[in-house]
Image 1 (cartoon, rainbow over the protein chains, first blue to last red):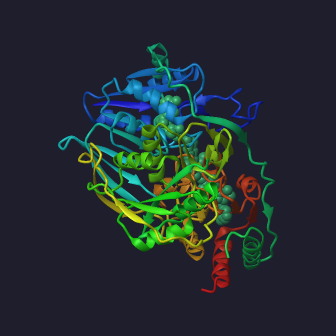
Image 2 (spheres, protein in one colour):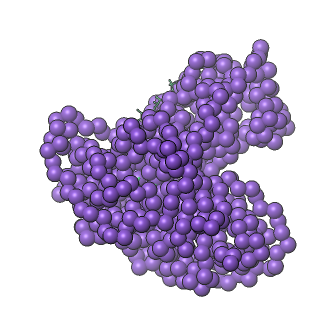
Image 3 (cartoon, chains in turn purple, brown):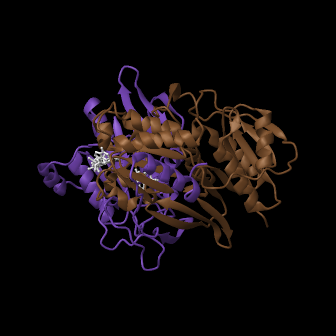
Length: 258
Length: 327
Ligand SMILES: Cc1cc2nc3c(=O)[nH]c(=O)nc-3n(C[C@H](O)[C@H](O)[C@H](O)COP(=O)(O)OP(=O)(O)OC[C@H]3O[C@@H](n4cnc5c(N)ncnc54)[C@H](O)[C@@H]3O)c2cc1C
Ligand SMILES: Nc1ncnc2c1ncn2[C@@H]1O[C@H](COP(=O)(O)O)[C@@H](O)[C@H]1O
């Protein structure tokens, strides 16, 4: 089974967000870009499937400029991916449709029974790449996927897709594009010898197809909410009084319920 | 020239969902008196179409779900493309639900359009559609321009007002039949279960969320959280400490490795406020924290705080809410 995993370099979740000097985007100055969020789960899921299906390979793909993209590919190799491909762009591209087009052009020419991506990227949270990739490659695509399993006798995947109100159970043969929602609390971490080994592994670099860099979605402003002042503490002498005061505030001042 | 808009709506219990109604209202506001085409996905129900017309759409089409059952965004795209070419549509609006986002991505890729999801404000400017959307789990907001000739915009539920009903002409409901996608025979939906939600509404969808953390103390005592949620018709959430301990299922976990929620009101009970939890709820409009430790970091992100023993405060709060709501 050939498993492709697409990973996006995103700001470390602990990053203190700041706007760039032109106020249009996040200020990348001093930000560490890492593998995180659902993408980390996508890699974990790929590796778990490989353990289960003999003769499988997990191949990582990242689109964007160096050094961010090759760096997170390096961490994918350290986690155990078999190969890494950098789809090189000159500048960061944050339009998910451009991302999908660039990745789709490369993936379309490779054997991939299963393409795994995050349900949404930790930073832009669009959730567009999985369905766009599916449409471009003309393969079925599902997002919000959990509990992905492979059934060897039936040559089918089974998985769940969560909607707002129910959890659907699906079965599908390869090829598939899946946006994973599964979030393991503890995806594996790279062991030191593997980190060292990954440093010496090659990272393939292919240029992004021409035309795939002209976005139609242009950032205009990046706003941070005014810092929260800290909670207004409710003074009380008995629990009943605390409850009564809070409910009054929530109804009359915050107007969050009638 | 006023652009033509297509609004795609979802049905629940034979009615357009609130988010679909909001989308109709937004479309109406954007185009003034120009026509708005509506498309409902599911089996035809005439009253649903009529109600939706009062919300802002002028004509309603039906798109039957593909025979394989269940919603496969890619399989609907060919029919959508045919419809779009018919009406010289420039903008497609739809609810930013899980399925709405799948449809937005698949459609935009094939229609060669710009797209944005989770949008909380949209205006027309000379450069294109200007959209605002929370990013980084609500820790920041970005504003973008979708500058191409075509755009697909998924609107975050409950971020727009419910439309004012208007006098509307009777809907011309035309049934459109779906050409099944080329691989409609591939994936099959074999069943479904309601979301494990701890009783009340689903976590991803609820206007109020009551979440419990390790401070709740035990699986048994977590019932206090569920009772408070019940009194508020709220969804139940949990910190990872709770789901890791197996007190409640992982589907209730809020945070970096769980769900991101943005309700009107989030009540965090016995939760310390670790950053990995906070990123999943900081986009909530009003945050209340109940914690026995006055220096707990959760009080830095909360709007209102009660320092105290949750075993006493929560039952009192549940009783007070039941009292004011008359039940
Ligand atoms: C990679 C990674 C991902 C993670 N993802 C998530 C995630 O998605 N979601 C998540 O929640 N966490 C996540 N975590 C874990 C996170 O760091 C915290 O450990 C977790 O949120 C703590 O849960 P808690 O607040 O319930 O427990 P604690 O931190 O133990 O806090 C319990 C709180 O309860 C209070 N308390 C105790 N008794 C009472 C009482 N009787 N009355 C009132 N208050 C009381 C205490 O003062 C304390 O503040 C993640 C961690 C990592 C490393
Ligand atoms: N530049 C990129 N390179 C590789 N994969 C990406 C890139 N951007 C997004 N993805 C994948 O697409 C998923 C969804 O991204 P988005 O649609 O932007 O929310 C991410 O979780 C990644 O798996």
